[in-house]
Image 1 (cartoon, rainbow, N blue to C red):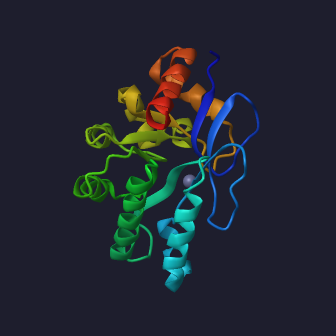
Image 2: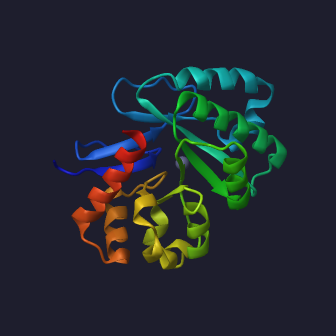
Length: 219
Ligand SMILES: [Zn+2]
């Protein structure tokens, strides 16, 4: 079987049969018939949604019913954002419950909130896979998150030697790894290329590994 490039989280999908992308959509966007998608209420949206939060939650629940919406994302916590952290936690807990009830893994947005995210996973005894996207932490952060069964997705940071993850990357646990383009203009192939170089690993082996991680979570 020919292996493909998995792009676990993107807002800028590319075309090509060699790609498997989870495309992140806004709640207002209808879900296309073909492809894989994710919907959520992003913590940044809290201010703009205001009192319509319940309407948004209902819309999200509807969106998640489609079989080609395979993940809830991106949801999570952001300590650098102005929205109060308590409101972010409440929204995150709603979405954890939804992810568990509907059996949809979550793609996580995490800014300086590793500890709280781990605490939430424990508190809710979450069974669904969680994929922390845009990961740019240290080797110790990796160990801490993977130790809780959380998958890590790395993107454009791998192209920048000054980023924390660039140094830490060779120690990554391959069974918990994904790659992504997120907002990046570069193709996922470029991110794979950078990953292969940092790992000193065979290109096709890395593709197989990530494809198998995908299958493991999404069957
Ligand atoms: Zn994103």
